[in-house]
Image 1 (tube, rainbow, N blue to C red):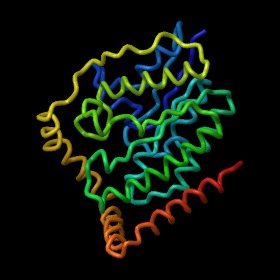
Image 2 (cartoon, rainbow, N blue to C red; image 1 turned 135 degrees about the vertical axis):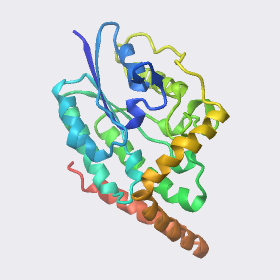
Image 3 (tube, helix red, strand yellow; image 1 turned 45 degrees about the horizontal axis):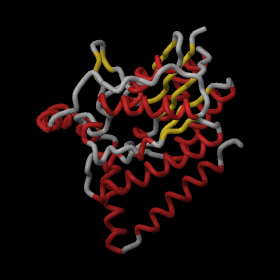
Image 4 (cartoon, rainbow, N blue to C red; image 1 turned 60 degrees about the vertical axis):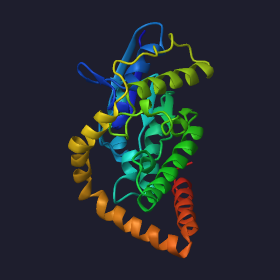
Length: 274
C-alpha cells in the first residue's frame, strides 16, 4: 500500500525557489519519495500567496479526502505581510486544519518561519513590526504543534542569515539547496520519532545558488513588480506600523508594543477550542 502524503501551505511548500523542468519542485516533493521504501502518493495542495484562511477554505477538504498518513502544514508568512493581520484569525485557521487532520491519525509536519523583514534587510522601523507579527505566528504554531503532537522543524533557526546559498534570488524563499536542507531535516526528525522511512533525500539539488548578478537582476525586474503588487494592500498599513514604531522608539516605549503582541497571542490561543 502506498504511503499518502499531502502538503498544505503557500509558496514555500509549493516549491518556489527550486525550479524543475515542469515548474517548481520544492522541499515537500524532495521529501515525498523518502517517506517510504515503497510507493508514495504525493499531493501538493500548497499555492503561492496562500493565507491561513486558504487552509480551511480550499486546501483542507482535498487533503482529508486522500486520508494522508503524513501531512505538511507550513504557512503564516503571508498573513504577516497583510495590512489586516490578526493573529486570532490565523490561529483559528491553523487550529481547525490541524485538528481535522489529527483526528484522522495523520502525522503532522509543521515549521516555524524566519522573519521576512530580516530576510529582506528592511530598516528597523519597517522590520520590527513584521518581526513582532512573525513571533506571534510562530508562538501559535509552536503551541499547536505540541497540542497535536506534530513533527516540528525549527525552520527559523536554520542558517538563512549566514549562508546565502540557502536563499533564492528573491531572499524570501529557499534556493534549491535550501529546499533540500528542509527536506533532509524533516526526514531526520521523522526518523528520530520512530517512523519507518526510506533513505534520506539526496543532498544535491538541480540548480546552483544564485549569484550576485542574479540577485540584482531579480530586484530590477520581478522584485519591483512584487513590491508594487503589495503597495495597495501591505504598504499603507506597514507605513502606519513604521510610524507607530518610530514614535515608540523616540519615547523608548517599544516594550509596550511587545507586551500588546504577547497579550494578543495569548488571547488568541486561549480562545481556541480545548
